[in-house]
Amino acid sequence: MHTFVSPLEAALQQAPEKTAVIDGADRFTFRQLHERCSRLAGLLHDLGIRKGDRVAILAANGHAYVEVLVGAPAAGFVVVPLNTRHAEPELHYALEDSGTKVLITDRDPGALAEVVPVVITLGDDYEGRLSASTPRQLGQGVTEDDLAGLFYTGGTTGKSKGVMLSHRNLIANTFNYLMAVPQRADDVMLVMAPMFHAAGSNGILANIWTTGTQVTLGAFDPAVALDLIEEHSVTESLGVPTMLAAIAEEQHVRPRNTDSLRMIAHGGSPIATEVIRRTSSALPSATMVEVYGATELSPLCTVLVDEEKLVDLPLARSCGQPVLGNHVEILNVDGEPVSQGEIGEVVVRGTNVMQGYWNKPEQTEAVLRDGAYWTGDLGYLDENGYLFLVDRSKDMIVSGGENVYSTEVEDVLYRHPAVLEAAVFGVPDEKWGEAVWAVVVPRADHSNIDPAELIAFCHDNIAGYKTPKGIDIQTEPLPKSGPGKVLKRQLRAPFWEGVDRAVN
Image (cartoon, rainbow, N blue to C red):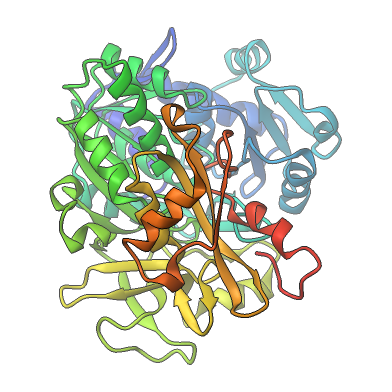
């Protein structure tokens, strides 16, 4: 039986004096990390927190986040990582909905302090309480089936939901990750994706288990990320496509020595082939790995390794094959398997499938059927079991009876040298029902790009019905959720205001 205490104890036994976490000027060994997690357990227990009680954290990446994310579940509590980009009403909802007993934060909690009995502020308050507490043995009475984390979704397709993930879910997915992307004891991982995302816990647990070192990046900045890669000889990292695109832009303009980097993974949203090319050329020593999944899957489902070598092949549009222990099938609306190569909904079975949505039985029933998770993603499988995603079911555009997959149009737009960011979605159209529309953020040296040029470029590369009817040019970055996914519903909403259609 393995729970969150397992990687902590393995690292303590195998490499107690090795550096576990680097957070700016702060460094902690695996012995110190284990002790701090034990002290956190004692601190929370002295506050009256008991097994199964929820402990929330609202903070930027850092050593304390590692301690709470791993230490709280190891002590039998349930960690609730909160999205730092959520507005106060959204955070209030998550705290109240989860019944959180303690909030640990690096900022002024404001009115949130009224929702929870105890607030601990990172810095002197946290450190003082930790040093004064009596260490408590980790893992006592904790089982694989106990709830380890309550992850509130980013809300890209609607209201946030608390995803219930057990120790079994998250540990199984950690093993899946270690099988798919082997880790080494000499690895140095740059933690640049926000730790409140389920992918954060997955990579962190795997890294601790193999006694690798973690370098935390508080707030994503491509220049700082590259500086840390160079300074600490970082060997691996994981981010969303928008992060990789920003790092590639910075590296092409102000290059650093990134020869130590052997792997950079990405997930969370589809990636354009042009972003793969630019990232690979900027970071030539790194193997590129695409990971696909969902918070509800703890979160890993499929992996595509050596992506940069496939960029000119059709397989580059795949998100890989299922990780060990995952079964992926494509079903139609009636729950029946479709033919090979036919598009349907991606449905996943495995030990990593969530327990359900907290306090939401109806929404749980809608996506969990016979133990399988219906992802809401549309895709197909090829003859070798590679999964190809074509769109989110909610992002698919139906124009004149033809299905238009926004990711296909975005991929074409990204090929244009003027395009830094692109998002494609459907807008109301009296004749066709829906029309294709795009919002584009140009590169700095192409700020005067004419939308007509981009539309003509699309006409030359894809069918007319897939070509955007209009393109809005904006200089500010596209709106994104905490994990970095583009919030298409925000871009789409003004067009559908007053129209009889749900905006997701």
